[in-house]
Image (cartoon, rainbow over all chains, first blue to last red; front, top):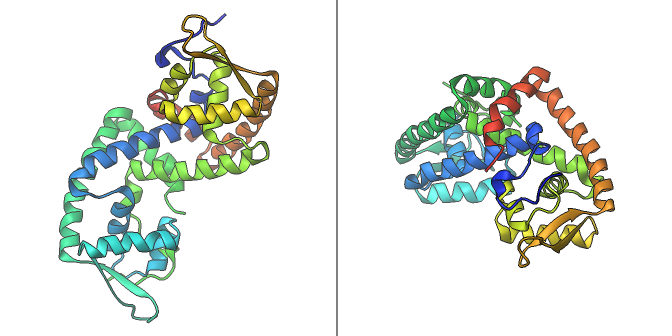
Length: 150
Length: 150
């Protein structure tokens, strides 16, 4: 019979650690903490980094296209864009084909900050490689790419 | 030059989808939504399911050992335990070796509900297998097990 345990480290987690869903959640906790710690010098959180990279890759896209692509509700995207615009990292211009909409562009400052963020994100990703191994990291990307688009 | 995009589906996400950290986050969003939808008939959320399985595997463990094992701060565990106790799924008894602490046990109702939850969690995990393939699922567990314990 199992003895009462006092330290978390000796607690059996056999059921949970047999579930990929649980492990994905635990990995995400690590990713979130490490990403935020790594990007803290630039004051850039994961959602902000995502938005900046997508605008860089898709200059002129609309707020709606951005929110759809990232799977963030539009009411969640607007305050994030407001914050990035007030930091002069992006600008909204009138959209070519839909004057009710805005076209999103990075500023020169936005591009410069994103380049610095990219370097830090690579450090974060390198730490993830240290956790799971280079082969595991490649496999992860291959397995999880099905979740890459909402 | 890239045209302005209107639909999220045509937005390029090349940078993000090359990052394992981003894909883990996106996978976790899917897992969370599917888990909650699947377990909704039992009104059991991921943290509650985790707690119940750990108490089943480690009868008599303390609140502190539970919170350490799951990486949930103690102030977060207590209201979860209160809720499960008020639903008569678990009971707290005086701890054998530390009378200031409580020993956690499932009730018969808790064991019965958890058995039903296990069956639904398996359905959820099966849907994850459909998303990533049986081989991908096995690889995921193998790669991510390093995150299984805090």
